[in-house]
Image (cartoon, rainbow, N blue to C red):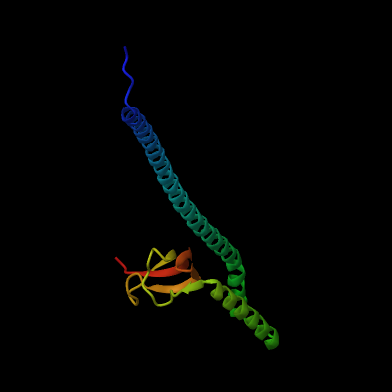
Length: 178
């Protein structure tokens, strides 16, 4: 016959079963925690990457916006250059009415000053040596009186706009006789 289990043995078996169950539940909770921690780390990494990507996008848009504005300003100033040239030619001619001439001169000066504030910079040519990067030789004259490649006359003034070439100066250049 079966012998009845002693009361202490039964409780030991139940305690072992409880320990085994607790250990497996603990392992399951630890595994779930590790899984959630890895998921959290992945999400945090994704958030940081998206923030960096958005910041780069914002900077690129600001830079492009500035470039578009710069281009629009340059094109506006370029469109006004013929008017400035016309004023310069008009001021070189003699006028009978001195008040009219003075008024034209004031209008020219105001327009020129406004364009300078926008970033227009005239290129100095008279008396300089010819530089193909900033001058356009319209006429070349043989001369022994002047240095080789000296600029004798300026037909149309050249301009830079905020440090970049907007229009080269059209000049008359001296060359040595061969």
